[in-house]
Amino acid sequence: MSELTNAIKQICEEKNLDFQVVVSTIELALAAAYRKDYGEKNQNIRVEFDPATGKSKIFDVKTVVENLPEEEEREMLERLKEQQEGIRRVEKEERREEISHVPGEEEVKKFNPKTDIQLKEAGIMKHGASVGEEIVTELPIPESYGRMAAQTAKQVIIQKLREVERDMILSEFKGKEKEVVSGIVQRREGRFVLVDLGKAVGILPAEEQIFNERYNPGERVKVYIKEVRSGNKGPEIILSRKSEEILKKIFYLEIPEIANGLVEIKAVAREAGSRSKVAIWTDVENVDPVGSCVGQRGARIQTIIQELGGEKVDIIEYDENPEKFIANALAPAKIISLELNEGEHKATVKVSADKLSLAIGKAGQNVRLAAHLTNWKIDIIESSEGGEVKVVTSEENGEVAVAEEVVEKLESSEEEK
Image (tube, rainbow, N blue to C red; front, top):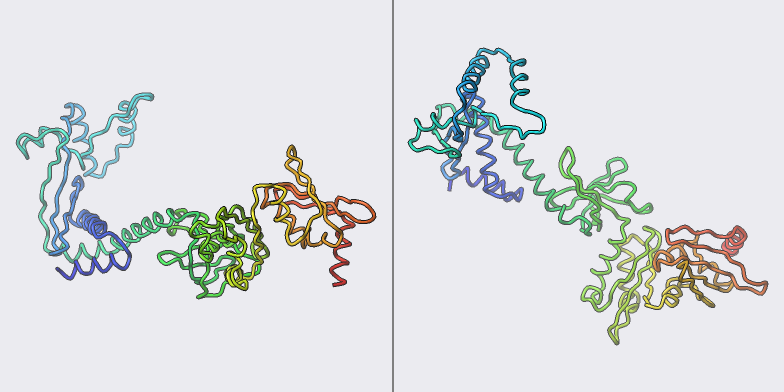
Protein backbone atom coordinates (compact mmCIF):
# COMPACT_ATOMS: atom_id res chain seq x y z
CA MET A 1 0.00 0.00 0.00
CA SER A 2 1.50 3.36 -1.08
CA GLU A 3 1.94 6.43 1.13
CA LEU A 4 -0.64 8.20 -1.03
CA THR A 5 -3.23 5.50 -0.40
CA ASN A 6 -2.55 5.73 3.34
CA ALA A 7 -2.95 9.52 3.21
CA ILE A 8 -6.27 9.24 1.36
CA LYS A 9 -7.57 6.66 3.83
CA GLN A 10 -6.52 8.91 6.71
CA ILE A 11 -8.49 11.80 5.19
CA CYS A 12 -11.49 9.49 4.78
CA GLU A 13 -11.34 8.41 8.42
CA GLU A 14 -10.92 11.97 9.72
CA LYS A 15 -13.72 13.40 7.58
CA ASN A 16 -15.86 10.24 7.54
CA LEU A 17 -15.80 10.20 3.74
CA ASP A 18 -16.16 7.35 1.25
CA PHE A 19 -12.79 6.23 -0.18
CA GLN A 20 -14.08 5.91 -3.76
CA VAL A 21 -15.69 9.38 -3.58
CA VAL A 22 -12.30 10.88 -2.64
CA VAL A 23 -10.53 8.99 -5.47
CA SER A 24 -13.16 10.24 -7.97
CA THR A 25 -12.62 13.78 -6.67
CA ILE A 26 -8.87 13.45 -7.21
CA GLU A 27 -9.47 12.21 -10.77
CA LEU A 28 -11.63 15.26 -11.54
CA ALA A 29 -8.98 17.55 -10.08
CA LEU A 30 -6.18 15.92 -12.11
CA ALA A 31 -8.29 16.20 -15.26
CA ALA A 32 -8.78 19.92 -14.61
CA ALA A 33 -5.03 20.36 -14.07
CA TYR A 34 -4.13 18.53 -17.30
CA ARG A 35 -6.74 20.45 -19.29
CA LYS A 36 -5.37 23.76 -18.03
CA ASP A 37 -1.66 23.17 -18.70
CA TYR A 38 -1.48 20.57 -21.48
CA GLY A 39 -4.90 19.97 -23.00
CA GLU A 40 -6.19 21.15 -26.36
CA LYS A 41 -9.41 23.10 -26.86
CA ASN A 42 -11.72 20.30 -27.95
CA GLN A 43 -10.45 17.52 -25.75
CA ASN A 44 -12.77 15.86 -23.23
CA ILE A 45 -10.25 14.84 -20.58
CA ARG A 46 -10.81 11.87 -18.31
CA VAL A 47 -8.23 10.68 -15.77
CA GLU A 48 -7.93 7.22 -14.23
CA PHE A 49 -5.98 7.48 -10.99
CA ASP A 50 -4.45 4.45 -9.26
CA PRO A 51 -4.05 5.25 -5.53
CA ALA A 52 -1.91 2.13 -5.02
CA THR A 53 0.84 3.37 -7.36
CA GLY A 54 0.04 7.10 -7.42
CA LYS A 55 0.11 7.02 -11.25
CA SER A 56 -2.46 8.32 -13.70
CA LYS A 57 -3.70 7.45 -17.17
CA ILE A 58 -5.17 10.27 -19.25
CA PHE A 59 -7.75 9.84 -22.00
CA ASP A 60 -9.71 11.93 -24.49
CA VAL A 61 -13.27 10.57 -24.48
CA LYS A 62 -15.75 11.19 -27.29
CA THR A 63 -19.29 9.87 -27.87
CA VAL A 64 -20.13 8.72 -31.39
CA VAL A 65 -23.01 10.64 -33.02
CA GLU A 66 -24.66 10.61 -36.45
CA ASN A 67 -22.79 12.32 -39.31
CA LEU A 68 -23.61 16.01 -39.74
CA PRO A 69 -25.12 17.34 -43.00
CA GLU A 70 -22.44 18.86 -45.24
CA GLU A 71 -23.68 22.42 -44.75
CA GLU A 72 -23.80 22.08 -40.96
CA GLU A 73 -20.35 20.44 -40.93
CA ARG A 74 -18.92 23.25 -43.06
CA GLU A 75 -20.36 25.83 -40.67
CA MET A 76 -18.90 23.97 -37.70
CA LEU A 77 -15.41 23.84 -39.25
CA GLU A 78 -15.63 27.51 -40.11
CA ARG A 79 -16.69 28.32 -36.56
CA LEU A 80 -13.83 26.31 -35.09
CA LYS A 81 -11.36 28.09 -37.37
CA GLU A 82 -12.63 31.48 -36.37
CA GLN A 83 -12.52 30.54 -32.68
CA GLN A 84 -8.88 29.60 -33.07
CA GLU A 85 -8.21 32.97 -34.68
CA GLY A 86 -10.07 34.74 -31.88
CA ILE A 87 -12.92 36.01 -34.08
CA ARG A 88 -16.33 36.26 -32.42
CA ARG A 89 -19.39 35.23 -34.38
CA VAL A 90 -22.15 36.68 -32.28
CA GLU A 91 -24.49 37.53 -35.16
CA LYS A 92 -24.09 34.16 -36.86
CA GLU A 93 -24.56 32.27 -33.57
CA GLU A 94 -27.77 34.20 -32.87
CA ARG A 95 -29.05 33.57 -36.36
CA ARG A 96 -28.24 29.86 -36.16
CA GLU A 97 -30.07 29.59 -32.81
CA GLU A 98 -33.15 31.24 -34.35
CA ILE A 99 -33.13 28.74 -37.21
CA SER A 100 -32.36 25.64 -35.11
CA HIS A 101 -34.95 26.27 -32.43
CA VAL A 102 -38.56 27.00 -33.25
CA PRO A 103 -40.88 27.89 -30.32
CA GLY A 104 -43.12 24.98 -29.37
CA GLU A 105 -40.77 22.39 -30.90
CA GLU A 106 -38.32 20.22 -28.98
CA GLU A 107 -34.85 21.71 -29.11
CA VAL A 108 -32.41 19.55 -31.14
CA LYS A 109 -29.16 18.66 -29.38
CA LYS A 110 -26.29 20.45 -31.08
CA PHE A 111 -23.03 18.79 -32.06
CA ASN A 112 -20.35 19.51 -29.45
CA PRO A 113 -16.82 18.93 -30.84
CA LYS A 114 -15.49 18.62 -27.30
CA THR A 115 -17.59 15.60 -26.33
CA ASP A 116 -18.91 14.29 -29.70
CA ILE A 117 -17.33 12.65 -32.73
CA GLN A 118 -19.02 11.94 -36.08
CA LEU A 119 -19.60 8.33 -37.05
CA LYS A 120 -17.36 8.58 -40.15
CA GLU A 121 -14.43 9.89 -38.08
CA ALA A 122 -15.00 7.30 -35.36
CA GLY A 123 -14.92 4.55 -38.03
CA ILE A 124 -11.36 5.58 -38.95
CA MET A 125 -10.23 5.34 -35.32
CA LYS A 126 -12.13 2.11 -34.56
CA HIS A 127 -13.52 -0.34 -37.07
CA GLY A 128 -17.22 -1.03 -36.54
CA ALA A 129 -17.87 1.98 -34.29
CA SER A 130 -21.56 2.65 -33.68
CA VAL A 131 -23.67 5.64 -32.57
CA GLY A 132 -23.69 6.05 -28.79
CA GLU A 133 -20.37 4.27 -28.32
CA GLU A 134 -17.47 5.95 -26.54
CA ILE A 135 -14.17 6.37 -28.35
CA VAL A 136 -11.37 6.52 -25.78
CA THR A 137 -7.95 7.78 -26.86
CA GLU A 138 -5.03 7.59 -24.42
CA LEU A 139 -2.98 10.80 -24.27
CA PRO A 140 0.73 11.21 -23.53
CA ILE A 141 1.76 12.38 -20.07
CA PRO A 142 4.42 15.15 -20.03
CA GLU A 143 7.36 14.73 -17.65
CA SER A 144 6.44 17.84 -15.66
CA TYR A 145 2.79 16.79 -15.33
CA GLY A 146 3.13 15.18 -11.90
CA ARG A 147 4.53 18.23 -10.08
CA MET A 148 2.45 20.84 -11.88
CA ALA A 149 -0.73 18.79 -11.71
CA ALA A 150 -0.33 18.27 -7.97
CA GLN A 151 0.07 22.02 -7.40
CA THR A 152 -2.92 22.89 -9.59
CA ALA A 153 -5.10 20.11 -8.24
CA LYS A 154 -4.41 20.76 -4.55
CA GLN A 155 -6.93 23.58 -4.15
CA VAL A 156 -9.48 21.79 -6.32
CA ILE A 157 -9.19 18.65 -4.19
CA ILE A 158 -9.61 20.64 -0.97
CA GLN A 159 -12.67 22.40 -2.38
CA LYS A 160 -14.22 19.16 -3.63
CA LEU A 161 -13.61 17.46 -0.29
CA ARG A 162 -15.33 20.35 1.46
CA GLU A 163 -18.31 20.03 -0.88
CA VAL A 164 -18.53 16.27 -0.30
CA GLU A 165 -18.25 16.78 3.46
CA ARG A 166 -20.98 19.46 3.40
CA ASP A 167 -23.28 17.19 1.39
CA MET A 168 -22.73 14.30 3.79
CA ILE A 169 -23.37 16.50 6.84
CA LEU A 170 -26.50 17.96 5.22
CA SER A 171 -27.79 14.47 4.38
CA GLU A 172 -27.06 13.10 7.87
CA PHE A 173 -28.65 15.94 9.84
CA LYS A 174 -31.58 16.23 7.43
CA GLY A 175 -32.45 12.73 8.63
CA LYS A 176 -32.34 13.98 12.24
CA GLU A 177 -34.64 16.93 11.58
CA LYS A 178 -37.44 17.21 14.20
CA GLU A 179 -35.40 15.11 16.64
CA VAL A 180 -33.73 15.92 19.97
CA VAL A 181 -29.94 15.55 20.21
CA SER A 182 -27.27 16.34 22.77
CA GLY A 183 -24.60 18.96 22.07
CA ILE A 184 -21.92 21.08 23.74
CA VAL A 185 -22.14 24.86 23.86
CA GLN A 186 -19.25 26.21 21.79
CA ARG A 187 -19.50 29.98 21.99
CA ARG A 188 -21.85 32.95 21.60
CA GLU A 189 -21.82 35.13 18.49
CA GLY A 190 -24.04 38.16 18.99
CA ARG A 191 -27.56 36.91 19.68
CA PHE A 192 -26.75 33.39 18.46
CA VAL A 193 -25.37 30.47 20.46
CA LEU A 194 -23.27 27.94 18.54
CA VAL A 195 -23.64 24.32 19.68
CA ASP A 196 -21.18 21.56 18.73
CA LEU A 197 -23.16 18.53 17.53
CA GLY A 198 -20.12 16.39 16.73
CA LYS A 199 -19.77 16.52 12.95
CA ALA A 200 -21.36 19.95 12.62
CA VAL A 201 -22.13 23.12 14.55
CA GLY A 202 -25.76 24.07 15.10
CA ILE A 203 -27.21 27.57 15.53
CA LEU A 204 -29.46 28.41 18.47
CA PRO A 205 -31.18 31.72 17.54
CA ALA A 206 -32.30 34.21 20.19
CA GLU A 207 -36.00 33.46 19.58
CA GLU A 208 -35.38 29.75 20.27
CA GLN A 209 -33.44 30.32 23.51
CA ILE A 210 -35.01 30.14 26.97
CA PHE A 211 -35.04 33.65 28.42
CA ASN A 212 -33.51 32.77 31.81
CA GLU A 213 -30.93 30.22 30.64
CA ARG A 214 -27.21 30.91 30.46
CA TYR A 215 -25.31 29.02 27.79
CA ASN A 216 -21.76 28.64 29.07
CA PRO A 217 -19.00 27.28 26.76
CA GLY A 218 -18.35 23.59 27.40
CA GLU A 219 -21.81 23.05 28.89
CA ARG A 220 -23.78 20.04 27.57
CA VAL A 221 -27.36 20.79 26.46
CA LYS A 222 -30.19 18.94 24.77
CA VAL A 223 -31.51 20.72 21.69
CA TYR A 224 -34.31 20.17 19.18
CA ILE A 225 -33.26 20.20 15.50
CA LYS A 226 -35.91 22.52 14.13
CA GLU A 227 -34.66 22.88 10.54
CA VAL A 228 -31.72 21.80 8.37
CA ARG A 229 -31.01 23.83 5.25
CA SER A 230 -28.19 24.49 2.79
CA GLY A 231 -26.47 27.85 3.28
CA ASN A 232 -23.71 29.76 1.46
CA LYS A 233 -21.06 28.53 3.91
CA GLY A 234 -22.39 25.00 4.28
CA PRO A 235 -25.29 23.30 6.07
CA GLU A 236 -27.24 25.47 8.53
CA ILE A 237 -28.71 23.52 11.44
CA ILE A 238 -31.30 25.59 13.31
CA LEU A 239 -31.82 24.48 16.91
CA SER A 240 -34.41 25.15 19.60
CA ARG A 241 -34.58 24.90 23.38
CA LYS A 242 -38.22 25.97 23.55
CA SER A 243 -39.71 22.96 21.81
CA GLU A 244 -42.14 20.66 23.58
CA GLU A 245 -40.30 17.77 21.94
CA ILE A 246 -37.30 18.35 24.24
CA LEU A 247 -39.55 17.86 27.24
CA LYS A 248 -40.99 14.64 25.77
CA LYS A 249 -37.51 13.31 24.93
CA ILE A 250 -36.20 13.94 28.45
CA PHE A 251 -39.18 12.06 29.90
CA TYR A 252 -38.40 9.12 27.59
CA LEU A 253 -34.77 9.13 28.70
CA GLU A 254 -35.39 9.54 32.42
CA ILE A 255 -38.57 7.49 32.98
CA PRO A 256 -38.11 3.75 32.18
CA GLU A 257 -41.88 3.15 32.27
CA ILE A 258 -42.33 5.67 29.45
CA ALA A 259 -39.39 4.29 27.46
CA ASN A 260 -40.78 0.72 27.55
CA GLY A 261 -44.37 1.80 26.81
CA LEU A 262 -45.98 1.07 30.18
CA VAL A 263 -46.76 4.78 30.61
CA GLU A 264 -47.75 7.04 27.69
CA ILE A 265 -47.40 10.82 27.27
CA LYS A 266 -50.80 12.00 26.01
CA ALA A 267 -50.25 15.77 25.80
CA VAL A 268 -47.74 18.49 26.68
CA ALA A 269 -48.20 22.22 27.32
CA ARG A 270 -45.06 24.27 27.84
CA GLU A 271 -43.99 27.83 28.53
CA ALA A 272 -40.25 27.29 28.19
CA GLY A 273 -38.14 28.36 31.13
CA SER A 274 -41.14 28.89 33.39
CA ARG A 275 -43.60 26.01 33.67
CA SER A 276 -44.91 22.93 31.86
CA LYS A 277 -47.77 20.48 32.23
CA VAL A 278 -47.43 16.88 31.03
CA ALA A 279 -50.48 14.59 30.75
CA ILE A 280 -49.63 10.90 31.23
CA TRP A 281 -51.70 7.72 31.12
CA THR A 282 -51.44 3.96 31.53
CA ASP A 283 -53.80 1.01 31.10
CA VAL A 284 -51.52 -1.34 33.04
CA GLU A 285 -52.75 -2.38 36.45
CA ASN A 286 -50.50 -1.85 39.46
CA VAL A 287 -48.58 0.91 37.65
CA ASP A 288 -48.91 4.41 39.09
CA PRO A 289 -48.21 6.80 36.17
CA VAL A 290 -47.73 9.88 38.33
CA GLY A 291 -45.57 8.03 40.85
CA SER A 292 -43.45 6.61 38.02
CA CYS A 293 -42.66 10.11 36.76
CA VAL A 294 -42.10 11.68 40.16
CA GLY A 295 -39.87 8.88 41.41
CA GLN A 296 -38.81 8.03 44.94
CA ARG A 297 -38.68 11.25 46.98
CA GLY A 298 -39.11 13.17 43.70
CA ALA A 299 -35.72 12.02 42.33
CA ARG A 300 -36.86 11.52 38.73
CA ILE A 301 -38.81 14.74 38.36
CA GLN A 302 -35.96 16.70 39.95
CA THR A 303 -33.56 15.31 37.33
CA ILE A 304 -35.95 16.45 34.60
CA ILE A 305 -36.33 19.91 36.15
CA GLN A 306 -32.54 20.21 36.36
CA GLU A 307 -32.19 19.20 32.71
CA LEU A 308 -34.66 21.98 31.80
CA GLY A 309 -32.75 24.61 33.75
CA GLY A 310 -35.11 24.79 36.73
CA GLU A 311 -38.37 24.88 34.76
CA LYS A 312 -41.33 23.73 36.90
CA VAL A 313 -43.11 20.62 35.64
CA ASP A 314 -46.63 19.53 36.65
CA ILE A 315 -47.45 15.84 36.14
CA ILE A 316 -51.14 15.52 35.18
CA GLU A 317 -53.02 12.22 35.02
CA TYR A 318 -54.85 11.95 31.71
CA ASP A 319 -58.48 10.82 31.69
CA GLU A 320 -60.71 10.07 28.69
CA ASN A 321 -63.50 11.86 30.53
CA PRO A 322 -62.98 15.57 29.62
CA GLU A 323 -64.42 16.77 32.95
CA LYS A 324 -61.91 14.77 34.98
CA PHE A 325 -59.05 15.67 32.63
CA ILE A 326 -59.76 19.42 32.86
CA ALA A 327 -60.09 19.18 36.65
CA ASN A 328 -56.71 17.40 36.82
CA ALA A 329 -55.13 19.94 34.43
CA LEU A 330 -56.05 22.86 36.71
CA ALA A 331 -54.03 21.35 39.58
CA PRO A 332 -52.92 22.35 42.15
CA ALA A 333 -56.31 24.14 42.40
CA LYS A 334 -59.32 22.14 43.59
CA ILE A 335 -62.59 22.86 41.79
CA ILE A 336 -66.16 22.92 43.11
CA SER A 337 -67.94 21.99 39.89
CA LEU A 338 -67.46 21.84 36.13
CA GLU A 339 -69.86 22.11 33.18
CA LEU A 340 -69.08 21.36 29.54
CA ASN A 341 -70.51 23.08 26.46
CA GLU A 342 -69.79 20.63 23.64
CA GLY A 343 -71.01 23.04 20.95
CA GLU A 344 -68.54 25.78 21.87
CA HIS A 345 -65.96 23.27 23.16
CA LYS A 346 -65.87 25.24 26.40
CA ALA A 347 -65.64 24.25 30.06
CA THR A 348 -67.05 26.44 32.83
CA VAL A 349 -65.22 25.77 36.10
CA LYS A 350 -66.39 26.98 39.50
CA VAL A 351 -63.77 27.49 42.25
CA SER A 352 -63.89 28.89 45.75
CA ALA A 353 -62.43 32.34 46.47
CA ASP A 354 -59.43 30.92 48.34
CA LYS A 355 -58.52 28.67 45.36
CA LEU A 356 -58.92 31.39 42.72
CA SER A 357 -55.28 32.45 42.63
CA LEU A 358 -54.14 28.83 42.29
CA ALA A 359 -56.60 28.14 39.47
CA ILE A 360 -55.59 31.24 37.51
CA GLY A 361 -51.89 31.14 38.29
CA LYS A 362 -49.39 33.96 37.94
CA ALA A 363 -50.44 36.17 35.00
CA GLY A 364 -53.01 33.51 34.06
CA GLN A 365 -50.33 30.88 33.44
CA ASN A 366 -52.03 27.91 35.13
CA VAL A 367 -55.34 28.22 33.30
CA ARG A 368 -53.54 29.05 30.05
CA LEU A 369 -51.45 25.86 30.22
CA ALA A 370 -54.52 23.83 31.24
CA ALA A 371 -56.43 25.10 28.18
CA HIS A 372 -53.52 24.25 25.89
CA LEU A 373 -53.07 20.80 27.47
CA THR A 374 -56.73 19.79 27.25
CA ASN A 375 -57.53 21.71 24.03
CA TRP A 376 -60.65 23.15 25.69
CA LYS A 377 -61.63 26.78 26.29
CA ILE A 378 -61.87 27.29 30.06
CA ASP A 379 -64.01 29.85 31.91
CA ILE A 380 -63.37 30.18 35.65
CA ILE A 381 -66.11 31.41 37.95
CA GLU A 382 -65.44 32.52 41.52
CA SER A 383 -68.00 31.21 43.98
CA SER A 384 -68.34 33.29 47.15
CA GLU A 385 -70.95 34.43 49.66
CA GLY A 386 -71.73 37.44 47.48
CA GLY A 387 -72.64 35.24 44.52
CA GLU A 388 -70.83 33.99 41.41
CA VAL A 389 -68.55 36.14 39.23
CA LYS A 390 -66.98 35.11 35.91
CA VAL A 391 -63.32 36.07 36.24
CA VAL A 392 -61.33 34.23 33.58
CA THR A 393 -61.85 33.25 29.95
CA SER A 394 -59.14 31.08 28.42
CA GLU A 395 -58.93 30.23 24.72
CA GLU A 396 -57.10 27.26 23.17
CA ASN A 397 -54.69 29.72 21.49
CA GLY A 398 -53.31 30.63 24.92
CA GLU A 399 -54.99 34.02 25.40
CA VAL A 400 -56.43 34.64 28.86
CA ALA A 401 -58.78 37.45 29.83
CA VAL A 402 -58.93 38.24 33.56
CA ALA A 403 -61.41 40.72 35.09
CA GLU A 404 -59.64 43.90 36.32
CA GLU A 405 -61.08 43.72 39.85
CA VAL A 406 -59.77 40.18 40.14
CA VAL A 407 -56.29 41.26 39.06
CA GLU A 408 -56.29 43.90 41.82
CA LYS A 409 -57.54 41.36 44.34
CA LEU A 410 -54.86 38.84 43.40
CA GLU A 411 -52.08 41.45 43.45
CA SER A 412 -53.10 42.67 46.90
CA SER A 413 -53.22 39.04 48.07
CA GLU A 414 -49.67 38.50 46.82
CA GLU A 415 -48.44 41.66 48.60
CA GLU A 416 -49.96 40.49 51.90
CA LYS A 417 -48.10 37.21 51.58
